[in-house]
Amino acid sequence: MPPETALAAEVAFTEAVAAVDLGSNSFHMIVARIQDGHLQVIDRLKEMVRLGEGLKGDGDLAPEVAERALACLERFGQRLRGMPGDSVRAVGTNTLRQLRPGSTFVARAEAALGHSIDVIAGREEARLIYLGVAHGLAAGTERRLVVDIGGGSTELIVGERFTPGLRESLHMGCVSMSNRHFPDGKITAKLMDKAELAGAMEVRPVRELFRRAGWTKAVGSSGTIKAIATVVRTQGWCDDGISAHSLRRLRDALITYGKVSDIDLKGLADERRAVFAGGVAVLRSVFTALEVEHMQVSDEALREGLIYEVMGRIQHEDVRERTVSSLSRRFGIDRGHAARVQATALTLYRQLAGPWSLDHPNHSIMLGWAARLHELGLMVSHSQYQKHGGYVLRNADLSGFTRQEQAVLAALVLGHRRRFPVQEFASLPGGAQACTRRLCVILRLAVLLHRSRSPAAKPQPLLSVEGDSLLLRFPDGWIEQHPLTQLELEQEAQYLASGGITLTCS
Image (tube, rainbow, N blue to C red; front, side, top):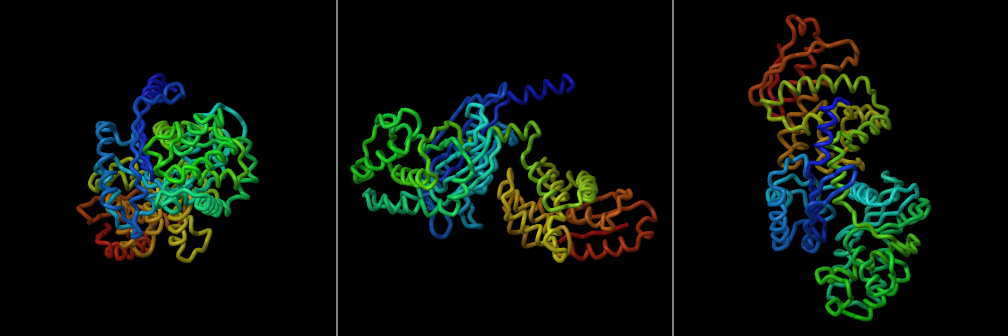
């Protein structure tokens, strides 16, 4: 590595990066540097927002809870002001996953924070949690079970070193369990039994998978687990972490208090009291179902995982690239052909990036990945294979990708041939609609120009654009010498016209 490159890498490693975790119970933000491979937190903010308790049956948020959350994000945004977008990663978890498609809350939250917010799937949340926890543990080769209890979901992961293997996200958390089983603040043995039984039912579909996964150490993260560990240590029931015996004693103590408002346990913060019984019930169900006898507690969790993820992307170690390569191999994609389509797509992209306002780095990255994966659906069936590819990319667990990114990638692959999917673009988040539509036009042209699948070099056409009117120019006489390509371009012009795009060739 040249000295100037090494110096740039060293500077990048010491620059501040930030992570924001919009959980169902708490919002967290950390600002940190990574030096010599170690995370150095320089600022940390946390607010108990209880977003999950505001989720209504119609998939929207109660106005007072939404305003509480937005006020918190405005405060976070003041701290992040001036930080470049690629050094900040903000994610939403269970509650934001459940918002109805037409909800405006995420857009309002992004405006308050001043940065984009990614809504991530449960298994992606699990991967990031494991990444954060693993960096905080002593190096070792043992297989670990990691448990993270959030407000609306509980993540279970088994992995080794920095690599997560088995991952699952369960639909139970301290807020949802408390709201469902202790709604009026009463705590009885019967109610606790019902809560633990409900937790056991959530774990049951994956119970045997996790029991047989060969883990030798259990580690817990999240505010709920840390609060439980603090209480059992303060009470003198367990000096290190959480034992199954200490958790039983804590359960009995809560039943003795009888009411949430009467809980008086040393080490338990007032702000956590309302959802504490639900959190204990969730952890008890995990301990029982997975036969955990003792659990260590980690200070690191999702937000620390986000920090390491941001640093990995800055250092060009993007897990999404590994995911795309893995998909390409798994679905038997013709990688030589895909690479030729990608090269042509990026050549066309460079001509249109300025006039079409596609100059964000993610635009070329997503276009390149879509080009590499556009034939993914052929493994299912050649007929309508673009639909099969789009379905897989929209619904699969793709490590590193947010739900929004998966939706964009799916739309590009779905739209790379035949009918121009106007409605698919309209269903995307507002900020992604126009750019995805235009990226799809570029991908379609690149795929069409390689329709013959020949590895022979093709002439690189020139593109000029005025609004949504495109002029595709070939070397003199070339298009007349290739009547099949000319016919295909005429058909393509008809497809694009349905989406308001005018294509002319010369």
